[in-house]
Image 1 (cartoon, rainbow, N blue to C red):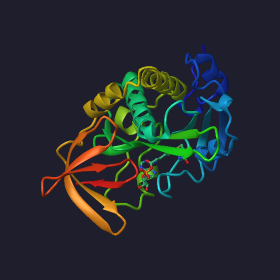
Image 2: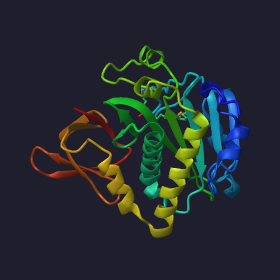
Image 3: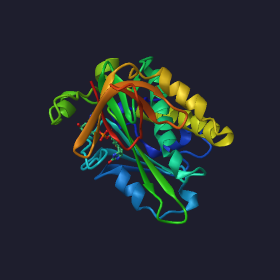
Length: 271
Ligand code: BT5
């Protein structure tokens, strides 16, 4: 059988045939290009049958990061949004972010044997450089709540085609092509991500098992013991990251030895 070239491999038909998940990926949209898969998924009307729908674009023209930031999304990357109709309280939203990061890290390991590191709350790094970001948007205005989880994974891309456009000098991006030395089959990678996500999601929902998720997340993070600054409007506080609590909040020790809880929506920068 002819093997598709990785760059051409996000085919809806191939993906549907390969997927072994129960719910995630049951409906699949694949576009050559979109402004943002996140916007497209958010625009679909809230409806329970949407749970597990995935929206993929081969390239995005206006990819979104958090708090109005831009996500550079050339061809060759994995730009995907997953719709979740939650059976849990929206206050546990941080766990969807952890589930997404763990699923990507597991899938990258499964396919390349590369160990990614997680940075709170939504970054995935290889060798200290960002390879993936997760974005979680919530639409809670309706009776049926909808979470849209966006995954932006720099896969089969040359890193300068991202780094040349980054404006923040402190942050460098890397790509799987650069770290792995070859291209990866994106359909197989998507399948691995969705399988791992379903595993974590089911164990979280069926047993409320946040402990396993928090523990796995802690194992994969190198943040503990590092100094960080948290920005709060014009103010900022500096401290040492010491732990993650059961609710997914990050615990930071300040210079007066008091412990401050940092929530996922806070703006944190590592030092
Ligand atoms: C994120 O935001 O890390 C979340 C990115 C989510 C992107 C996905 S792609 C599919 C879906 N559709 C969308 O439109 N978005 C989601 P944040 O933590 O705010 O990081 C954004 C910052 O990362 C930017 O301000 C840049 O400094 C940097 N950046 C931009 N593009 C990048 C890239 N491709 N790789 C690494 N860093 C990047």
